[in-house]
Image (cartoon, rainbow, N blue to C red):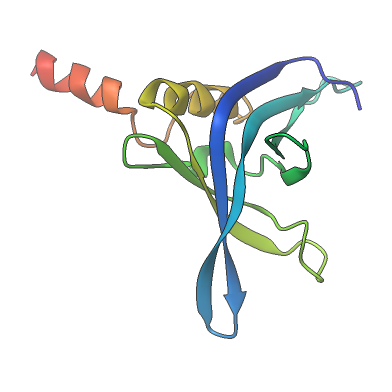
Length: 141
């Protein structure tokens, strides 16, 4: 796999929601280095992206999921982002899981969303605005 672009947000933690019967349970995956990776495509199609989180110290991969729908990423508070991805620890192939990534600052949150949104078909952000953008809109009114 070729990796052209690589964005890193150090010190992020990842958790996921798994179905156990009809209830969902949040499971902490750990803390580590988050990267948004871009794979070069050989044809004119849009390049594919992945989110990879490696655990601090031992560099074990704790999250490795493709960016499915960049427009469905939502802000949670000022430092977290929630999204759906493929569960690589599931017994079933292609099982979806809900993930929440906690970042160190709102700036890291904005950078992460910007990197992910570059994989949307429009290439622009159509989801909820970042806290800074919301503050700018209030000042204009």
